[in-house]
Amino acid sequence: MTGTRIALCGFILALLATGNAFANSVVKIKVDDTIQPISAEYVDRAIERARQTNADAVLIELRTPGGLVDSTREIIQKILASPVPVIVYVAPSGANAASAGFFILESADIAAMAPGTNTGAAHPVILGGEKMDDVMKAKMENDSAAFMRSFVGPRGRNLQLAESAVRESKSWTDQEALQQHLIDVVARDQDDLFRQLEGRMVKRFDGKQEKLHLVGDSVDEMAMTLRQRILDFLLDPNIAFLVLAVGALALYAEFNHPGAVVPGVVGVIFILLALFALNLLPTRYASFTLIIAAFVLFVLEAKFATHGVLGLGGIVLLTLGGLLLVDGPIPQMRVNLWTAMGVSVPFGAITVFLMSIAIRARRNKVVTGPQGMIGAVGQARTDIDPEGKVFVQGELWNAHAPSRVGIGEQVVVRKVEGLELEVEKAGISN
Image (tube, rainbow, N blue to C red; front, top):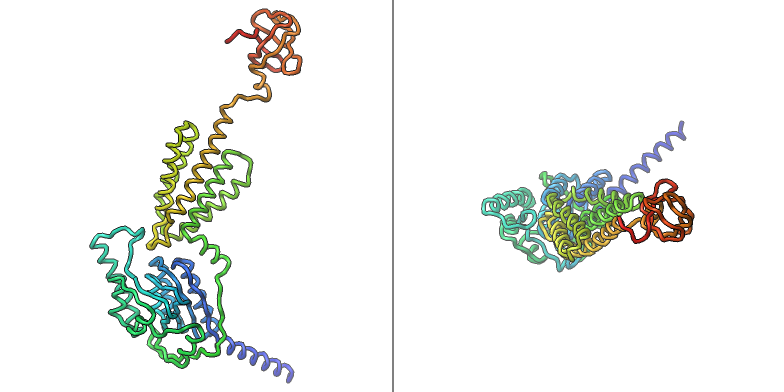
């Protein structure tokens, strides 16, 4: 009985030690990309791990040109509701947190920047970057400004200046942001950041006060899962368009060579991956009409040989379809011109080439089997009146003719009927 109690006490002490080890840690992630659904999922995982392990804080090292509004709002909701303090640190030197990144930075319990970084330029942009009418512009500005005020004020930062990033697209260096109370700390690196925050009282979004103790904490750097890394890679619009084009080309090769199997399997996989990624992005599905029209022009070019006119039209349509495919709010979330051209020109050339081969193959005369005998020239080995024997393509055949053919005369095969040929004298046409 005593041994059981000792074992139980040892187990409890081990659990307590493990809990203390978890408590003296900081969960860290790096967001170095556009803000999109996978970014939001990544931040959510980090905050959840910090909650489960009772960590002292979550550190988000941020570097982003901006991103999607919905994903930004989702990230900010997670930060504001986090049970542990969240530190957003714009780093390394030379990085920026623009547009959506500025919203995320201002929502944090601690907003920090490395020397030589900048932030701001949070003016809302309509998807695709088109010019907005005055009413829509006012609506979007007011909504974004109100969203900014909803958390900047409670954080005790410069509300009017933060709002000017939305209404006037203002940006600031690290020192400007610090001096004007947009951020709390400028730190050279992670260790310097922890030293400056040691013992600092933080007012959480729910009003509670909490003292930070980060010096000496272990850093639990959490990487993306394999699934997240794959999806994050595919959510680059340029990659998604390239994967879509490769899948379409593979399926096209399968249709031209039925039974090859491998191109068909590769094509289906690539197209499904592309569609899955495009479903998470602001995609203009109407642009698929341009892509399909480009295929039609490639086929017509191969069939009618218009000396490149239809092929060039197909390349133009495919390029436009790629450029308009993803309707992102920033250039980094759209297919760029060089990617669209780099895919469209080779794709058009390959498609026209494959289609030309297929059409020529269908037009060429059959040269094997019974059909290959038609038109062949042979020699009568007996009189054919109306039946006899002929020697054609190295073989002796039974034959019949509509008019008499003398022995030794040249004959032309006009029809194959089972094992007998219908022939006529050479030089006589149908």
